Each structure stands twice: as structure tokens, then as C-alpha cells.
Image (cartoon, rainbow, N blue to C red):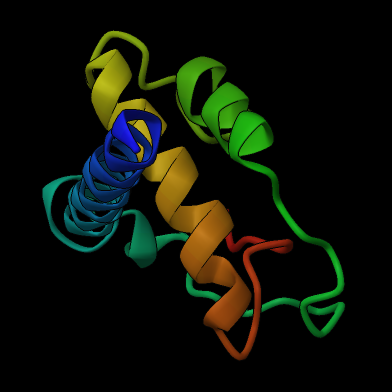
Length: 102
């Protein structure tokens, strides 16, 4: 019984934590860093390329092509939040973030 209560409490905490991270990521994407200005959610492949959290974190941290690295501008938590946001919410966008306007 105690284990069941502990599991329920932990699952409630992780859900609210995940929701908080998605909100942080969304705020960074649309407001703080305005990622959306360059990444206009328009993919030539019709959204077939699914970005993982790890892939997004790597790109945001180290940069890619003309995109600068954000490792000295965002905290690790903020970079993780972007990774969670794009990999989670991106599945709901009509066009995915597999192709960027740079």
C-alpha cells in the first residue's frame, strides 16, 4: 500500500514537472529567444523527420550551421526545456521542425 501511494505521488510530481518544462520551453521558443522567428515550423518533408529531445538539446547547446550555440546564453534547464518542448509539442504541429529557414 505504501509503495502504491509513493508511486502515485511521484507520478504526480513528474507530470507537473514535465508540464512546467514544456511551458518554460514554449516561452523560450516564442518569447525569450524567439526561436520561432527563424524556425517557422515549415517542413519540406511534411513532418516525417521527428526530432528527439537529445538531438534538439545538442543543436541548441552547440549550434548547427548558421544557428549559434546557446550554451553560454541559456541555462542547462532552459536548454533541456527547449528539447522537451520541441520533441513533445512538435508532434502536434501541422508542419514539423525538420526543415529550417536559416
